[in-house]
Image (cartoon, rainbow, N blue to C red; front, side, top):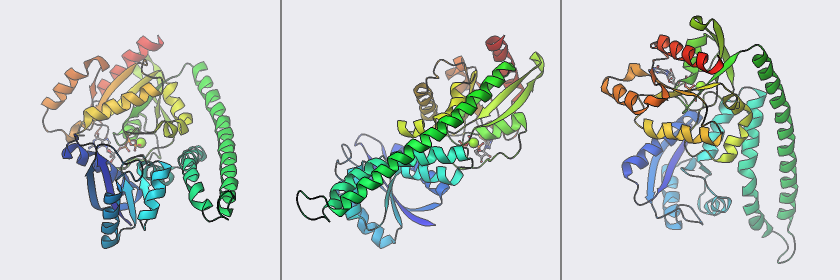
Length: 365
Ligand SMILES: Nc1nc2c(ncn2[C@@H]2O[C@H](COP(=O)(O)OP(=O)(O)OP(=O)(O)O)[C@@H](O)[C@H]2O)c(=O)[nH]1
Ligand SMILES: [Mg+2]
């Protein structure tokens, strides 16, 4: 298991409590990928340093701690620019990752289908490609002096060309898969089947709910972030309206997802964009519930889904001792027809079915 030092740079006005909460999420991400956090460092700064993100002094200090603690890896809770990675390389003796590197590692671990694997490779290439430019200047110093192109630079040119070709190749293959998905959706439409897509923050219980509703087999449910990377679809009978409805599970959302990462998963997220109704699954036991609802709403907007019919499904009510929390949530989110369930203990399923039946009737006639 990798021993990890976690570093965050926060604005001066951010409270320590908020900063620690954000770091908790990153710690969970690191655990999911298989690392162990041994030290957490929070640095207050007006804004991250252009050169080293942390500031050179802090970076040197982190390096000393890393050496003393025999750490394997330094992870920064942010998105590093290529030149920042380059500078940090010269200070740290061990690798440095940013938040996206961690997420990509988890994606690697959880990807099962060819489609998911290709989408991740695409995301990784797009994340790593800009970093090569920074290396260009550094490596060319190995060359034959000013105004001559060094061996490093030539090597990088070849590498860039190779990466560009690979990106094109994957995009082509994904376009073919997209066509297949579109065909499948057309067939469903012709059969008059409507689709409800489960959306929500990672770990909120989407896959558990899919299983409870549709009894689909071989689903991967885990107390891990990004357990699901592929779209899985099950079906469910709605007796009141004598219709079958499809339920699609999909990748969970998380804060600070850069657009390139969302774009890499567009093929998977097509299921969300084409759904007739969205079921936003929310973990009621999460202390950061309001922010997480907002993060999901923001990503839905980026996917042009803000006008879709939506139900808020508050999950994990079995973990709530104080019922007044649920009353407050019901009032606050009343316009999203809130439903309270425990997907794990199969509580509230009748309410959910009723809500689906009435939405189905209104939406699909
Ligand atoms: N106590 C409790 N735990 C639940 C409930 N529903 C899901 N869980 C747990 O929450 C964790 C995450 O569940 P998943 O169904 O994998 O969540 P997900 O939203 O699909 O997560 P990602 O695919 O990673 O985005 C698992 O440990 C589940 O057992 C619930 O109603 N009550
Ligand atoms: Mg899941």
